[in-house]
Image 1 (tube, rainbow, N blue to C red):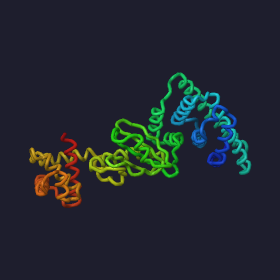
Image 2: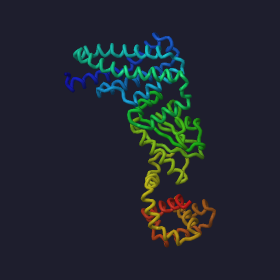
Image 3: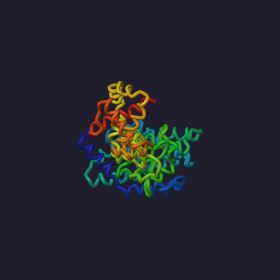
Length: 375
């Protein structure tokens, strides 16, 4: 029985081998030279899938387990991709075998140089073969299904990969590798309303030299980028969050969506990072506290009667103009004295003083909640 320390050394060796850029390049060259059907594919395509498979295998070896569903989902996507490219399943399996042979050949060299017992390397290879057999079985089944007509179009495939990215966790790491996203500097998420921007608009925001995976998700157009987004075209709002590791993308996606909502609420345009609108985003996320606030001041708003909406909108405009009465009056197309009167009336019926810091925050939250819920 090998000790835990011995196994850790073995896994570290495999990670070292897999991480060698020269070795990956050599493996890709070997695949293109040996497997004729794969030769027309780009180096980046072959390298991306090879790197993702090897990373998944290393994680499985470290945990001494077979493939998990997230890894098998990636394998299915690889099968669908190769089927759509017209690559036969036999060629796919040969390509994987050529890459495997290069990796394990290098692992034997490094193991010998580091004094690792051959038996330990054999144990690792046997465990890898068990993992690889399950992967090959899923790969063959998915490839056959794709050829039977169950193929994803390019846009549908992007949507599938994007949803795996946004799920976070280990699935996101595999999806990032498949999408060709560079994760060394962290990933960014952008969220815009469908119809307000196009996929081309978000691609421009991603900037030159960067990679992006963009697709509609419900009523939003969502992008995952591997570099900080550039400024958006005027007249649109795009929520942004990041950078983060692929495993954290579920949280970052939620932050970007919150940034978009907060930007729309406060009337801001452009690429709005969550850190720029953290207060309104935090307030909007607490519907339970907003309900309590509305309940607390329900009678005060009732006292305003028919003037409730003009007063509330006046206070909002005044606060969002940094208490600049003239600017608020201009945005509302009313006289400055009208704005002053509305702020004073609001203060009288609610007991809130919007001239103070926390009074202003509470007043803004109450007004925005009332406008949102009184519809």
